[in-house]
Image 1 (cartoon, rainbow, N blue to C red):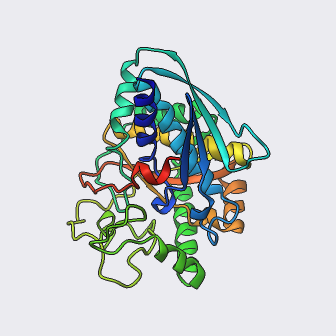
Image 2 (tube, helix red, strand yellow):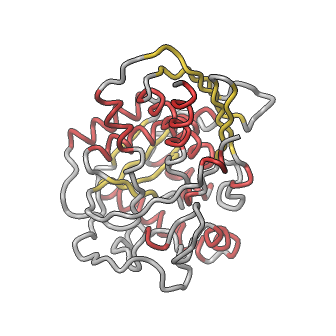
Length: 319
């Protein structure tokens, strides 16, 4: 029973979100202990030289693992960064006491494979304020701060910085080649990267531009975007510090927020371009984030579109 729970939890963890769907993690099992490790070969060396986004991605996988183990009936006992001599070992998770999963755990576990990253505009349907406040509380439970940007002027600033960063990165050959590496053409059999059907040919959301995964090709879906052009709620996730522990905490908070949002039919779009440029990130930190470190910029909204998720098989990520 325990072996089955461990393998089910690891398989669930592979469905966590990751930058460009790089899936930069591996898992190893030693008895009743699961080790979560960073796959540094999948690090974005141009846009993420410090591996901040890699750690956030792995933190999301860690929270997914925790949730799946609870759904399987075991309390996870987690140690983050347990060995300073092995920096790629991000966490260990041991099976604790048996438990009866509560209703919320069951709901979150059910959203793990259903959740999708959105890469276009949203409908005009509002996200209820009570739900937004609940999501703020979920982030706080993982020691991160989720701040909805309510002032239109502040939203304009975040949008302008995103546009500026996207233009600079699009004109930088090294940045562009890195995005191209993780863009999947139509019909590709790869199980990582961003599929061509995961974004529209025209996003309808030029205010918050997405990456140019099509890079000049006629890729993307032809879904009618006329009803999906709203920005949604812009929010920034921050932490007091900016080290490995903070990045892993961000990933856990992010996935906790995303699974709760998905349970209410709310999707998220991510915009990390400005956070990959030091000067722009520092501007955001001082001017909009009360000197906390911005770790993620996202939009939350409602969409009726669906996309196919792709993940590497367990055999590729499990030692």
